[in-house]
Structures are given as structure tokens and as C-alpha cells.
Image: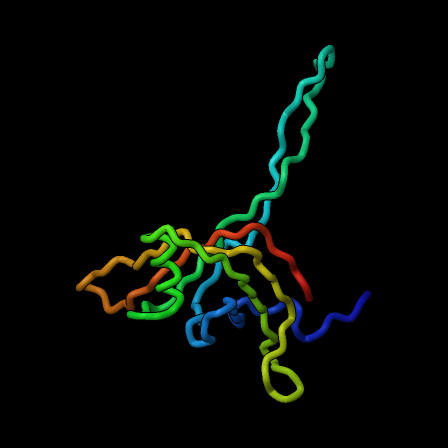
Amino acid sequence: MPVIGNNYPPAGFYFKVVIDGMPDSDSEFQELSGLSMSMETQSVKEAGENRFTHQLPLPARAEPLVLKRGLKISSPLVEWCRKAIEDFSFSPKSLHIFLLDVEGGSQGSPKPLMAWHLVNAYPTKWEISGLNAQNSDIAVETIQINYNYFTKSS
């Protein structure tokens, strides 16, 4: 039986998001979801064959990435979202997601266990959580990002 290191299974709470052209301080998120690719199929009937239909694969489709963090009043990331959504002015960027080792590297800095690189990412939705005077919750902004595809490395 193979020996599995201390980082199996890896912790899902220690991650880093890097967006090309954005400062590191603007890329801190409390939650990330939607890192997903799926492939649909198309049914094709063959003349004279009544027992089944052929299921042919279609190109893969990337699901939108959803990022959540405490609301920032002003930031380059929010400005990027505003330009795309309000001005319909897009500047796609590369986006990198790193799942980090909780134990840290040899110098105490976190080392990436896995990385995903999203190609041609652009914002498609910006949302603020509901405001409620009866709760003491912080305001959370949610940013939805679409992209063409991602590659994974470990």
C-alpha cells in the first residue's frame, strides 16, 4: 500500500488566488467555488437502429467561478468588475488558484500543493450580501468570473 504524506487529504481552507495585474491585497477571499468543467453529449439516432441512440461528446464547458470576501469600498478588482458590467469593456486576465500546504515549506512559507490556471477570465456578476440592521454580519461581496478553460498542475 502506498505511503500517503501528511497533506492527504489536503485542507480546503488554505488557498490563494492571484489575478494578473491585481495587487496581492486585492486577491484575498474567504470562499471559492465553481472550479468545474463538464462535458455534455448530443444524442444522435442511427437509421434502422432502434435499440439505442449514439451519445456524442460536445466541447467541454467551464462553470463560473464564484469568489466571496468582505466588502471592499474601493479596489482594482471591483473597478475591473465595474468596467466589464457597467461599461461593457472587457479585459480578460489569467487567474491562478493555489491550494496551499497547511504545514508550510522548509522556510516556513506555504508551498502550493496544487494549482489551477484559468484562461481568459472576466467578471460577469458582482453582488453584495443582504443588509440587515438586526444582524451583526459583515457585508460580503460576491464576484462571479467566467473563463474559457483551466489547466491543473501539482
